[in-house]
Figure 1 (tube, rainbow, N blue to C red):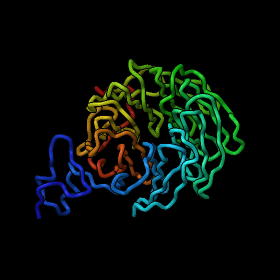
Figure 2: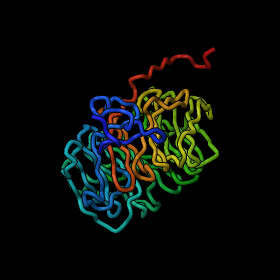
Figure 3: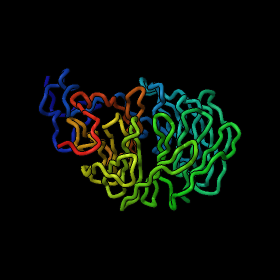
Length: 349
């Protein structure tokens, strides 16, 4: 049967309301302009406390964890039912400024604007300890094991914390302004950091040595590296997204210009495909080498801004979050028509 508007739980492309053109049967799920959601949670509709825009997917593909905006508490949602299956109340009045979860989903680190990091054991649903520093925490990332937590601060410093001892183990010095994003290569050998000093730095994690530096004309807000460690993508304050070739400084591959607002998050979802979110309320899946949107790869949220995005490579699910809700999709629905041939190191003639 045909419908006059998109059914509940679906969003459409920005420019064409394709849902009006088809019948709502199996074809609705296959239509490239319609996005089936695995789960959506609305704070207002569900009567939830105010959440920080740092929700992350559990690496088992079954749960979503969202820190509260103030105080360091959190809620854990079951991805299938939407039920709250774990919670902790706030412990202070400080505003949350960063969040990270370990790959085993055992530990969570919640950073605050007063320089503290609250560590929680999610498996036991109990408080672990507090890591204290002088500067506001701006970015957090666990290393590949549960033992070490990377923390970026608003003075440009990056430290490695031992989760067990609570001591600082290493420092990565070089940025001159607030660290905005941290990302590890899949094998855990490279750390990529972005900063308001308009630079990206690639570090050898074991030695702390700088491998590459990339510079841009605007503040860089988010960064990611592809699984093969050949490309880096950065989301920038002017609404552009740049793809860099890893190995030589400032080797620009492509620039993506299709968002209409500041970039909030970028991530590789395979070796040559990027997902990006923006303050214009859109999420776009696109090809890194050509900077072209994939068919059906434009998602328009029902909010004015997408403030956070998280991708889990194991479950292949992607979460995007507005001020009032989050939604989860399965990205492989948008990659069926993409074929990429890799190998050349220079332009194909």
